[in-house]
Image (cartoon, rainbow, N blue to C red; front, top):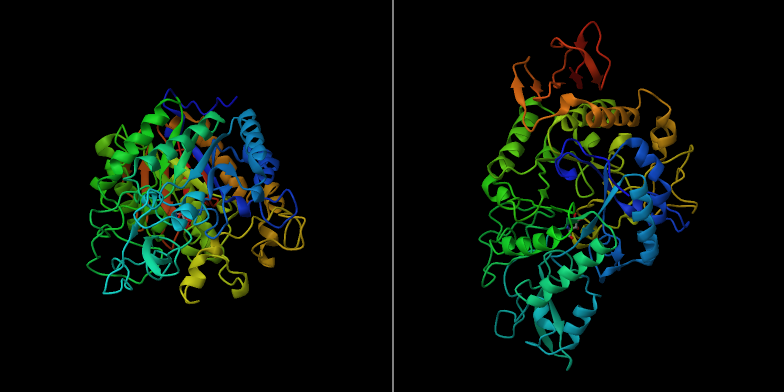
Length: 528
Ligand code: NOJ
């Protein structure tokens, strides 16, 4: 059973509220200090109460966990750390009983260096069929001691590592856009595509409702692997001019993936697509490619009405030409949490609450990152010894990486680990100042952030005023924005420093209580 969602007759994912679970940090059911699938299952009641339609579960396949599961050594098994295959089957069944869909995170661009294919490639000769599943090249320079090109890894250092051949001599180099433990696959090799199709079917046959595809703009590489004109040493970012990503061949790959998904009515493929240009972005969501692609503009935007409006207009324009569905997200496991991005403290929380109401008022699919509903800030003062992101080591301890947004969820009680685990310590420490932010502390509190999320998600799901695929902008005071959905919902955001008069209508919900008909600064309201 899954059913519900049905907001009109559209496919479910067009208006779904997805909740992103970072499994290591959600809930620990076996007391080892790390979250797992049993933990997610234990918390399904909470997720049902929150009202989300679907989960995006970050990678739980077999992995040595060098990059938090994005280094997969067996894509058709669940890592024992997360409870094994049985735990996945149980999660799917129980989530479906509660009308919650499950989407998994798959990693088509690379494998773990512990994947049997890569171990075989290392053991095999240069130019062998085993090596042809990855991207091996001879080095440059007289003795091949220089990497084949100048590409840097997203996690710092070169994107190439040299191997030692069976006779002990230095050999070819292999490409890894991310960590050396994440060798890039060669998607020009039909075996790679065939294996990925097998993985898609494996999970779809087990009942999952779709996938988030990691680095969905990255699988195709440019012919001849030319040098980058300019090498940036900035980690974790790239732009549209970057040859490592967004090569035209990627679209054939997406068409192939879509053909498989089309055999499973209702299944969805959501791509991680870091592409700025709207035309190029829209190519990913043509009718025979991905169903949805993440648009990260709101997740990168500061709290000013101009920036927010530009991000919304841009995201709508990026899908308009191909009549695809817009997606909205304020944060995820790779970026700073929105409370911190908006300035932190009470102001950061107020702004994050307001922006949640803006994104839930928009047409399309919304992705909520676990912990956003609690108003969690980034934990930027984790002790250095606790840091796990490969970026920390690879940057020579100059970049702390993404651990600050991956800290476990505080569930209950007055001190860490706040019911997240029965172990004495969680895999990343939880700040003791989060006692007031626990789920337990917030659930009974009508004014809490979690209560606001619950009310907003419920209203969005049941009120007819949220209907229609467009928005119409309204005039409003400086540093504010207002738009109307065809169904009649009006959303007002006050990003200024003073209260503003609300337009006529009944207030359905507000992120801060209006006083004398005025909406406070750093707040949003819905009117009908
Ligand atoms: C994007 C994922 O979201 C990120 O966490 C991961 O490190 C890279 N892809 C590499 O798989």
